[in-house]
View (cartoon, rainbow, N blue to C red):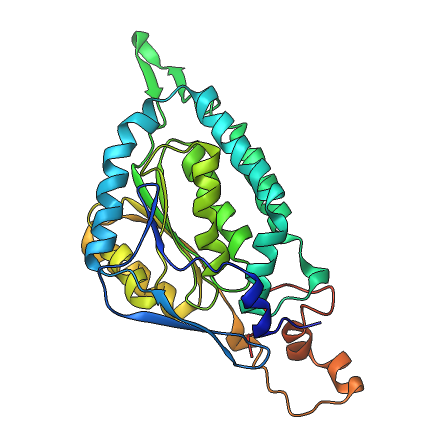
Length: 300
């Protein structure tokens, strides 16, 4: 059954930025209008769009937190990541409800939070295994390599699996000793903003893991920011190209892109029959929530 906007009344919707281990309002006056995709009804029109000063504040907090997080004993970082993984499982119901409300996923597809928990648990095991290498060369010369964290990193996630894709970006970054700033899709901000509660409960130091709601303008600020050393983006090819260009023009920050291929599958629904739905490739991708298909079909 599709979620209804009345469901939001029973949820305490998180509608503040999470910066330096505190929920706070934005200094930017613009806000997001978040709708229920099932009926296009308005869920909230006061979700903050992080502006330049908000992004600067988050980056500054991350820069201050980085030396301590990097130097922290790997076993302590591991324990914090494990605790966060366990909290994802503990708050699975709340996270799934907040995601369903804004992306229309049916209850039968509530499995991404466990994917996220498994991802954090896996990368927690890597905190003490990034050891580099020493290779003997000729004449007593040694070639020594050592892995070093970037510092401040950022991730921009799409609407279709906000918690799972958060984990795919945040878990390896945090495990390696980086600080991480998350910018979720403007269509599905609530489950990501809820994570601030888990960040506090897991024991992350202030500034290590932060969350900024916003639209493309916030993503552009992150991609252009000179204090961010790496950014990961999942979304459309057009937006990914903008991220790549901004990263190159600013400080040549490293970029990871996972881009959609919706242009291959134009989804046109005009009261299709059951037979046509079963045969159409585009409809199979579109109806991924009701069939055992890839999850990122086009949002209607």
